[in-house]
Length: 289
Image (cartoon, rainbow, N blue to C red; front, side, top):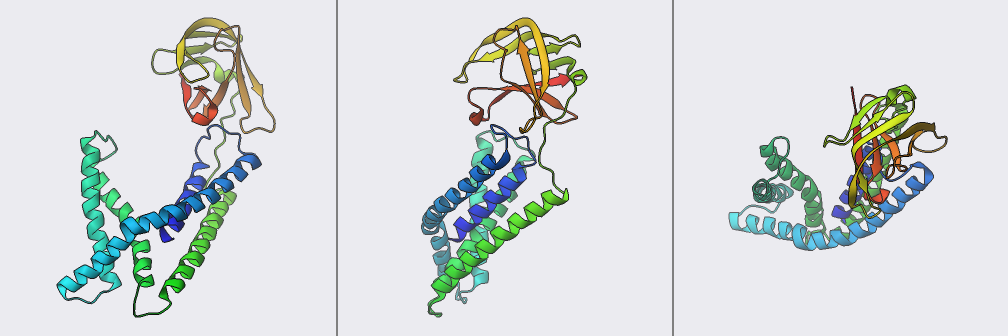
């Protein structure tokens, strides 16, 4: 149950953090909020089931291993020894998993950091659940299992409420800010926007746009070709939706719909979805100065 509670809290933190990032595939609002709540409830149910499996495969073996170490070394079975066992096992798993990642071509910032990051993540993920399982299985304390179960449930709900309250307070006070698309004037659109791979859109102040090698996509997400054409563009203000402006391109076959504004005020982008918006895949062009 502890693993399930950790998963739900981590998911809530991820949702709160994602509010700062450019949203994909949705306009926000109550629909998005109810969807996020439903997803968290569903995740809670799945996490409880996965937590039971995780306990059987990882947590209980760690508890038994700690007790075996205590017997072999002649030491008293204690939570400190259990925690040390978790740390040693986590370090060994981090070494194994990290080495496999590097051999598979992992290319991240600071490759050697993968080992301590994995080890710390495993310790943080496994230690609370293992200590709770040890306490629940203490033969010297009748009823310990139910006391631990109640404590985990109340503690998990409490941490969930605190996490939500801190997130709401952070956004409400302005410490963190919910992402908003850049508000561009038509003059800001004038210039060349490129995809970094030879494709470009050139917006002129007189309302014309020239496309060179701009990718076209089918509804399935498959690339169907590239556009080289001249048409008209217009930036239209929208009221009451998540994105304040809509970019339209006409008289340019293959590029006549689906364009939007993204990025930030300093680094704006124009983009269109590749396939369905729910896929999160976008074809992006960045303004060049």
